[in-house]
Image (cartoon, rainbow, N blue to C red):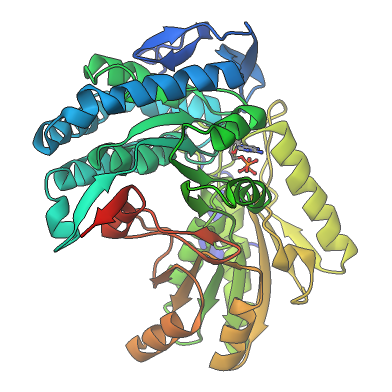
Length: 490
Ligand code: ADP
C-alpha cells in the first residue's frame, strides 16, 4: 500500500536514470586453464565448462574442469613450494608478499568489482563497496600478523600446517578467497583453492594478480571445477588442512570424509538468522536493517537475516513499513549503480528459491511480494515475505538462500530467545532495541556466532566469524582465524 512518503515512487516520480558501470576495463579471457605451479595450464583430461552471466544467461568464458589428476598436480606444486622457497622464507618477507596482494587488489578494484557482478549477479554497489574493499582489507590485516605470530600465541611456537585445501562458495567469490588465502599465507602455508563452479572468474583474476605479485610458484594454486573436484581435494592424502564454506549438506559429506584422518578442518555452513525487533527499537532504522539483512545481495548470504522476530505491539507498523520499502527496491541489472537487488546466482538456485515459495504457501503461510518489475531474461526473484508462519514451517527452519523473509511475532524477551534458537543453525543474529542491557542479555542468550546490535551484516577482518550447531566448526577472521592455520608447539 502506498504511504504519502513513497507515493511519488509509485507514480514514477522518483525513477532513476540508468547508471551502468562500464566494463571496458574488465578483461575476461575466452578460456581459462588451471593455475598450478605459477602458470595457467590445460586440464589433464581436456574438459572445460561455461561460466555465464546470470543476469542475461550469456556465456562469459570457458573454464577448466579440474580432475583428480589436476588436483594431484596442484597439491604436489603446493608441497614443493612449502618444502622450498615459501617454507624457508622469513616471516617478515612472507608478510611483504601478503601486503603486496592487498595493495594490488585495491589498485585493480574496479576490474574485480565489475567481474564479480558479471559472473555472480550481485549489484555493482555491493561488489564495489563491500566485497572488493573487504577482500583487500583481509590481506592487509593478516599481512600484519605474518611476523607477529609469537604475540598471537604467547609462550607457544606457531608452525604452519603445510598444504591447505580451500573450497569456497558462490555468494562472495573474491571475499571468500581472501578469507581463506590471507591467514593461510600469513601463517606460512601453501594452498590449493577451488572456487565455486558458477563464479570462478574473480579467483582466476586473483591467480593472475598473484603471478604478477611474484609469489613463488606453487604457493597458491587455483583449480576450478565442481563438487567432484572439491571432493578430490578433500580426500587427497597430501593435504594437511581443509577449509570449506558452503552448504550444511556438503559440509557433512566433507566431515565424514575427514573423520579418522589427521587433517585439520574448518567448516562454515548454513544459517537461519533471526533479526529481533523490540518495541523500543528505532523502527525506521530497524526496517532498513531488515532490508539490508535479507534483500541485499539477493539473500545470498549465509548469515542473512532470513527470519524476522518482531514484538507484537509494533508488528503491524514494522510489516507495513517493510512492505512500503520493498516497493521502492530496484531489482535488475547488477551493473547499474542504482540496483538494490541483482540476479539470482544460477538457474538451480532460482529453482530452489521458487520451490520454497511454493512450500511456504502450501504450509499455509501468507506470501507477499513487491510489485517491482524484473527483466525478462536471466534469473530473478522479487523481494518476498511470509507472514502467519509456524515455528515448524520449513520456510522458518531451512536455509533458502534467496530474498525471502519469514516473519514471526513475540510478546516477551524469553519467547524471542526461544524462537530465535529454535532452528538447527546458529551462525548469526540481530537485535534492535534502545536498551543496552537488553542487547547484552540477548547476545548471551541467542546461540549464534555473530550477533549485531542495531545494525546488520557488518564485517571487519579483525572480527572472528563462525557458527554454533549445524552452522559449522571453527572460526575465521581476526586472531581466531590464525588458529586454524597453525600447529602450536611448546
Ligand atoms: P552452495 O549451496 O552454497 O552452492 P555447496 O556446498 O554446494 O554450496 O558448494 C560450495 C562449494 O563446495 C563449491 O565450491 C562446490 O563445488 C563444492 N562442493 C560441492 N560438493 C562437494 C563435495 N562433495 N566435496 C567437496 N566440495 C564440494
